Structures are given as C-alpha cells and as structure tokens.
Length: 402
Image 1 (cartoon, one colour):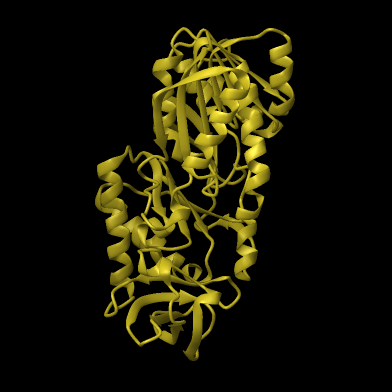
Image 2: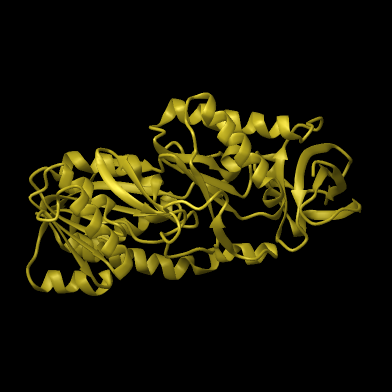
C-alpha cells in the first residue's frame, strides 16, 4: 500500500501551482512518468531538472494526475505518517470550533487530498473522491477513531457517501453504504442551540452543511423580532436560527419536498412550528410573487446552491446570482438586512461583490456592509489551493436611495 511505484517528471516551466503551495499536478504539466505501478499508487514528483518536489498518488484517468501528500522529499508514507496527519487535523478542530458536530478532515486543506470526514455527534460520514485516498481511507478512518477515543469519544458508526458524480472523472464507481455494522442513520445534533435531525444516508452531501455554522449564528442577532425570509432553506438551518433568536415570523422556501419535510420536522423538534412556516416552490418564481403581493421583510437570506461547478459555466452563473440578488433586494424593507452568499469557488469574492453591486444599482438600493464571512474554521482555507476557498457570505444593511 505504501510503496512508491513511479516517478513523475514535470515539464520545464510547469508546476507553478505546486511550487506556490498547491497540491495538484495536472496531466498537461507532466513530461514523463518513469517506472511502473497501478493507478492510485504513490509516486515521487521531480521538477524537470531532477529537483524533488515531494510525494503524492497518481491516477492516469484524471486530469488532476497527481495529488500531493507531502512536499518533504524524505517523507515515508506509512501508518505513522497518516496518524500524524489525522492527529494534526483533530488537534486543530479542538482549538477552533465546537467539535460535537464538525468537519474533521477537509481534503487538501488537511493534506489528505480527496478525503472528507464529517462528525455528527458519535457518527462519522466519509466521502472519498480520489483513487489514491480510496486505498488509504480505511486506515485513515481507523486512526481517526483511535485519536478521538483518546479524548473519550467513541464512534458508534461510520457511513460512506462517496456517491458524487465527480468520482466518475477519477474512473471510480459512485458508492454509499455502511462502513461499520448498520445503525440508525437519522442522527440528532445540536448547533448554535438549534436541534436538527441529520439524515446521513439520504441528505445532501454528507447530510448537513456544517460550513455555515457561524454564519447562521451571526444572523441570530439580526433576527430578533424580525419578519424573515429564508430562500433555499434546505432542511431549515437559517430559518431555525432566526426562529430560535426570537424572530416574529419566518417564511422558508425550497424546491425540494424532501428537504422541506425534514425542515418541518426540525422546526417541530425546536418548538418553532408556529413561528417558522415552509413552502415548497422554486425561489426564482416565489420572489416575484412576494414582491407583487407587496411583501417586505426585515431580513432576507439567500443561500443558493452552487450555480456553477465549472469555470466554463461561470458566465451563466453570474446571471443567476444577479437575478436572485435583485429579487431579494426588492423584498428588503428600508433599513433591513440582506444576507447573500455563494458556495462555488469559481465565483470569486471579487466577482460576487461586483455582481451584488450591479444588483444594488439596478434596484436603486444602497448597501452598507455589516460583515463579510466565509466557511467555518473546521473547513480551513489552504492558501494557494483555490478549491479549498469556496464559501463567501455577505451581510448588508439595505437602504433606499433618497
């Protein structure tokens, strides 16, 4: 499992991302591959002149040909090496976040590329999106359980959600299922004082969007006594944070009947069924209806899915973000607040800012920025690894031009 099978040699002048701190080597950056070894095996990476760049694992099926595990030319990738990585990830989380439910492993940002592990109380959910890491996944999860046990945390079950379409780009099948003895996959968690049922088997991604934890908390202080509109509510997280903070009323909208059913259950779990109401509908259709009906809100929250998952689709995504922000701004009462975000790393902070500014100009609204936030610290941003920085979250006070 840990033998180094091949040596990858970069083209002259290539590997700029790698040299600046990134962890990927693309297929068009490689001059040659020396030696033999199966896809997913460990390889050494050398610059064109033989200078050692580190150790990673290779996959000839992927445009991301090599994902680096270490920039140390002398590193020995073995169980102790993986334990070091796992221990560092866990120690970091203990310092920066509430660990009752959090992301324990965040791929490249924890130098375990392609692997995500989320903890929901005493359950772990893993997503493996890279062939080399698939070979190491079981060892990493075992070591992670051992590290948690040192702090008195016993994991009762593990579930795999490696069912993302992107696995096919790695030449891998999409898989999901139990990694331990079966258990009840409906897990109860508490975050920011709000209770949720998380469906780790059928929910989006690994079951819940942990990355917005502190953004949801930041909204609580703005929602006390407020009339709130939460768009793309999914299982109700922003809406319930508004409700628990004492909002006068909350309308939460999502196109998924399954998500809304879970959201209603979560509202009842928190005794908020009379404060928070839900509607199954397309947000792009609902917002004009609300505007035409003369509705205005103290707080409008826009948390859409990623409108783009590729650089090529960014132009159309900008139109979507512009439209949703125009519609949202029209529904904010004078002096009220708009929270708006993007979860696509292709939609850069500057691009999102420009798009929101265009929406404000189009609606003759003035924006006063309250906060700019990003993903929770258990989803750390690795500099020069752009894919690790994806969530941008703005809070504005909205006033009319006078």
